[in-house]
Image (cartoon, rainbow, N blue to C red; front, side):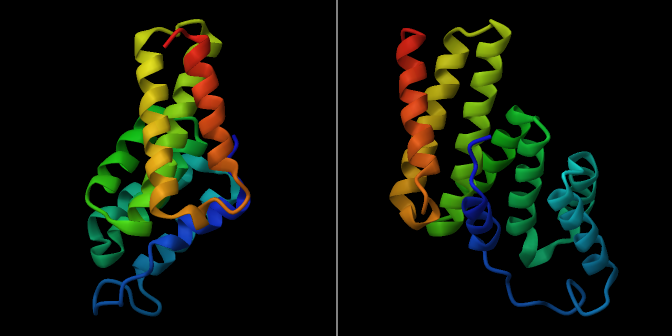
Length: 172
């Protein structure tokens, strides 16, 4: 994937942790332990475990729900479940503004692009693939407009160039 390590760090930490509410996240809680398990699984590349753990955490996440949904979408993306990742990230983006929206759009745009690339590798590229590429480009364009600092090394800008070239190759 083209996702740089610095972008990943920016995405994960772009949605600030909300103030902890009693009963949601407190020192030593089961929730914290489960979150740690999910996060470690994601970082270790055990994406199926991360996905399962994030999915179990989200219903009880309280003010941390947006962050967990973003990490869940990222786990789906890394697991190659591109269409699901795009859907989760897109739903998250629709309810957010500023950097929070930009982080979700980065995951959505990347997932859509990777899905389109998978279509192209499988030889099934058609109108729906061009539509994915256009949606990926729009998501990344907005992400960069909202928070260009999330792309310190130009990975998302480079991905946009690739997307535009691929749209042209497909006659879109």
